[in-house]
Length: 104
Image (tube, rainbow, N blue to C red):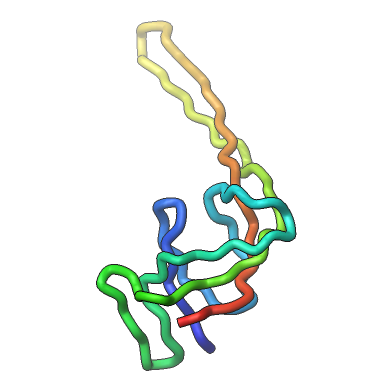
């Protein structure tokens, strides 16, 4: 099975055709095609091509399935004996994508 290692949103993902996963929010509507040009490595089985730092001419195509937000992440700050406590929440915007093609 062919796979690639891509970089998007400051993170790296190992992907294969058909994989569904969340990435940092992309500016694309649902049903659009997103292209990831920062391919760090691509290969199949034991043969792998590694870029320095990216592979020239390689790309990964994905279909945007859904724009959504992650579950709420809550932070709580507390100082003992000071009467200080602070609660804050945050929901990260995400994009659900499905990999359609790996062009290495």
